[in-house]
Length: 154
Image (cartoon, rainbow, N blue to C red; front, side):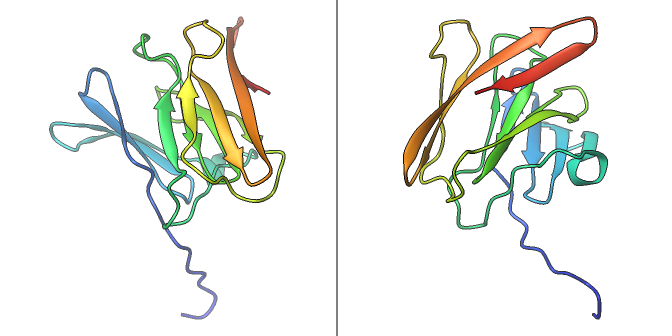
């Protein structure tokens, strides 16, 4: 078809939330959806590439780096992160809306699946990314203000 761009589409491994009753699926084209695990019924769908100026993480189909994770596992509605080959983004558990994103400081893609661990002891999972020339640590700081604000701190 003339004028039609074909884009490789790949899904990150799904994230189970709400005690395994719901799952979140992220596609490399920026679409995120949340479903009931028992029936597959869609709860919400959000297209981040259409509604946001920030960069949504991408990954190729042969990549092992795509990852979804809830950053405060002890809190039911805490935000989740989408990690790709060259960037990551933070999203609302309620609608999938992107709060913020961070592009890795080096251009070559990540080498391995990111490591998530609470390095600071604050209860929030922090992120380690390995690239060909460095290991990058991201301390995730979630601040609640009058309007809820979530940020990825480097």
